[in-house]
Length: 161
Image 1 (cartoon, rainbow, N blue to C red):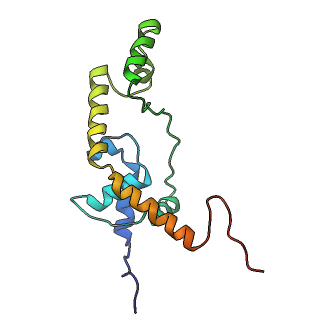
Image 2: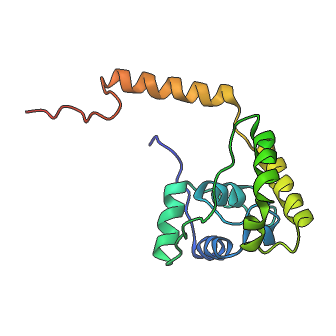
């Protein structure tokens, strides 16, 4: 019989998944403050102690069954503008340091520790970023599949009468 071989998630794997999801990523050596399904699945697949290969949808089902839910992140995104730092310096010169807002709601004792954590996260993100060529190939493949189905973005398929 064809198809993908079955991967069984046993009770021990289930327990490990829930315990890992409830732990802070920084305590497990990851440079971020909260898990996403993708980051948790990647961590479980590369864990040196015990490897659990699991898809994001199955991971979501297990977490939901065990009453593990994600809280809304209360942060903001940084600008991708290459001149952002220069603009921020001009604003800080007029209105004072903007990092006070970040420090007031963080667990970091000072700006040096905060900057180190940010740099650690950026190094991790850059090392684990998906290559632009891979992303472009995935987009082309999705477009090809949509064109075979004669399906456009945002439009439901025509239902057979």
